[in-house]
Image 1 (cartoon, helix red, strand yellow):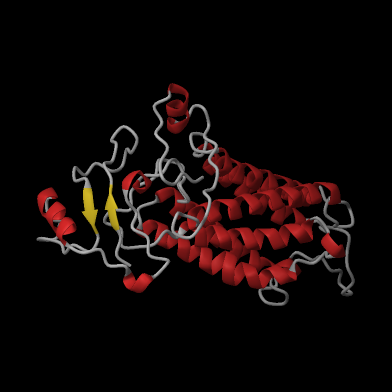
Image 2: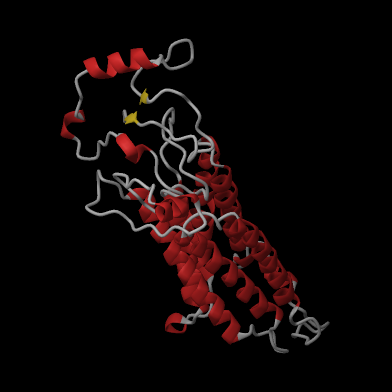
Length: 316
């Protein structure tokens, strides 16, 4: 899909985009591996009739101020939005966020005991296919579009879901069974009954530390982006503690585990919200997703100083 972007990037707001041209036409052929100069682009764009792609309602020419969105405009990065000029890829963030959200949502429902479900076996399929493989691919595509934060986060959590599925695959890798103590006669023994709980608790605590590092990178973005990692970090912490504080019979700490499940649900909802922010624009939605910037962020300071100019589309 050809897209024409017309905008003047503001160096003060976008630290990563410093091209001088103000008009970029994705349909214009490159000259010696680079785009033509401003005059050629202006003439080409002005003289070429606008093609409506057969009246395709999904076609959208991203022009004007909408070419530069505020912090986390549906892209999985805490910094200011990188313009779509020269881009040959779609935005992979909504795909990765959706994969993360659904898998987290189902597991969290089981953790809070919805409909008396106790075993997370159904999550294994989601963790391998959607939350794992699809999210990992989305992370790789984030690398292709130059988003280091998105590539690190989505690829890592894709790996988390794959490893989670490997651990819980019934009869597959025998990881849980290897921690199950048995006596010489084959009956269960009491010694080491919490070996798996302790090991799995440490596994989750490691992800708590990693998520906290990502959380620190969201402190100058938007509230929705921050809350996604804040809720997820608390979920990892509580679920890990529920394993580490299991009782002598090997049962996880139910109140702490449920609390972790609820924070997991909150994280899933925020991931879906952020995914919707990346999908909805003026070509397919009648409204825009509200934005709440931290007062110390770049956009927050602009709003307080009265210098902020509302763009055609402002998303989370």
